[in-house]
Structure formats: structure tokens, C-alpha cells
Length: 460
Image (cartoon, rainbow, N blue to C red; front, side):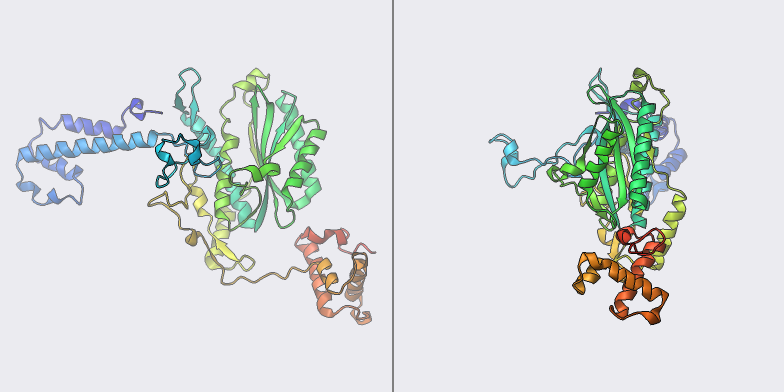
């Protein structure tokens, strides 16, 4: 534990100590002025202070100043304790069978404590290998962590403001090389390949580089995709990982592939909806794992790399404040028609490096955020008409091989509506036209297999 009492007194505490030393030589007028200054405003002793004796004023002032010092010391000591309790359910919960038969936690009426999480849950402290005690990082080191953590918060916030569903993939990429420039170049090519392969459905990513004697130089990544277009996160994780190995990496590991074995079921991996604020909060907090070792740079010099090399990278957000303000204005004016719920993401700003209960948890007292004030129904919601070529043809009992006939009829209808033979109803053709329109102008690629790049059906 870190004892803040050893870090010295604050200026306010020093001033109070000086006031205590000066009480002996103070006259009644000075004591009266000091009592008025330090006595709480709601104190019952405020009435008739000018009629009190000097000894009473002296005794009261000493009591108030000592109480203030004690309260500050107690608060500083309380805030200095490192809380490693698992508020996210990311660790296996305790069971009563884990304790001896005569242990008091075996009793059914006793609540089981929260399990202890790993130290990365509060990266403000590091373990000193020589003394075996926790030490708080320097101001500069904590500032570096805060900068990286803020970039993660900004990225996640903007993604869920723009997209109703985001597919999250967690990957660990391993290498045999120790040259960071070679690994970064491979990572850059791998990222470009994903962007070419998945197009606009690949939204963003953030990565951190780490080194250990056992695993060597490796990369932790979070990848984000449009969940309306892609959904099979486990297949995609394997697909991306195998490509990394083909490009020269040694191996890969993805939490998406075994997320069902996690205590929480990997609820913040895979598809996450824009209204699922609990999963969004956990996703942001898990970003601490990626930045936990950003200040550990000794291995760079040990492996022959530049000590000033960048260890964290994140997709930049252009005009972040403008995007947030625009979303907030649309939310306040209630002009969103395509979302069933209106979500306020301002609570993300309250997340910090310190390990605390969820902002929605009942473990918080005064500063708890009410879920109903963050997620509320949208009275102007209009359900989108999602037409699918396969669905339309199934209604007519047309086989998959005859889809081109539908698109041919659509093309003829557009060119010469008077020459249309009437095989399909006008309503069906308009729905098909909407699909083509969304493909061309809204970049909706769900049905791209039926169209050429210029928008014409593939049957031509």
C-alpha cells in the first residue's frame, strides 16, 4: 500500500499548522476573526460569537483546526489505497466451496467478497521488484497513460455515435523478430490488407507493443467493424490471425475464439449495440490492459530499438469535439429517426485510470448515473424498411439462380417503364430499386454480390 502521509503535507495543511502555532499569541479580535473563517457555516455556535470569552474562542478554534487536519489526513489516506477489486466480472467469482469448512464465508447469510483483479486494472501503480511494494507512477508517466486512455475513450464514443452496432475483435499478434521497425512495417501492411479486404466496414483500431522474455515482441489489438455488415467475429478473428502468420508473424491468439469460456462470456466482444452502455463501459475499461506497460521502455534499449519509439497507436478522430457537439445537438433536438433509443454518452468522460465501481452501479452513492437518464426511448423512431433480394424472391418462390431475372426486370423497369412486362409488382420493383440506391449512395454493401461497381446488376 502507498502511504501518502510520507509524501508530505499540502499547503493548506501547512497553513492550518501555522494557525495552530499562532493561537497562543493571538488576542480576542484575531481569535474571533479566525473562528469566523474556519467554523462551518451551519454550526450552531455561530450565533453570538462576539459575546464569547477569549478562552472559549481559543478552545473552539483549536478544536476546529485539529478536526480539519484529521479529516484531511483521513481522506488522503483513504484515497491512497489501491483498489483491485473486480467490479467488471472479468475474473472467476468466489464460491463457498473455495473456503475451509469452518470459515465464516461458508455461511449462507454472509455475502461473498469481490474477487481480486490483476494490477492492470489500476495502471497508476507499479510493483517495485526490490522492495516488493507498490509505488505510484510519476506525474509524467500518469499523464502519458491518461493521454492514451483518452484517445481510447474518444474513439469508442464516436464509433457508437455513428454506428448502431459495432463488431469488436481482440487479437494478440506474436513475432520472432526483435526489431520494432520490422514488426511495425508488418503491422502496417496487415492493417492495409484488412482495409482492402473489408472496405468501409473496417472502422478503426488501436494497438500497443509489448515485450517479455517468454513471448518476445508482441502486439495487443482491438479492431472495430460495422456490425450491420459483418457479424461472425470468431471466423474473422481466425481469418485475420492466419493472414498475420502468412505475412511473417509467428502466431496469434484471439479472445473472441474462446470468449464463451470467460467469466462474463465476453460480453464486450463480438457485436455490441449502441444502447448497451454496460458493455461499452467494460470495453473502454479493458483498454487499460493495452496501456498498462506504456512506461516500461527499458526493453527497447535491451532489444536494440530506439528508446523514443512509439508503443501505442490509435486511429485518429478528426474534429472530435465537432462530432460530439453535433451528436448532442441532434439528441437534444430529437431529430434522430433511425435509432430506437436515444443514448447520452457523456458519462464516458467520467471514466478514469482509477479502479472504481461502474458508473451505473449501486455501489456508488451520490455520483451514480441512472441508466434511465442515459438510455431513453425515441418518440420519433421510424423503423427502416430493410429489403433483401433473397427475401423478396423467396416470397415469390424463386430460386437463387433466378435472382438475375429479378435484377434484369429491375433494369428494364428503370430504362423503359412502359416496356415492362409486369412479371413483378411495382411495389417489389421499388423495393429492389431502394436496395440499388442504398448500394450506390449510402454505401450499403450488404447486397454488393448482386451489383457491379457502376451499380448495374451482374447479369449484364
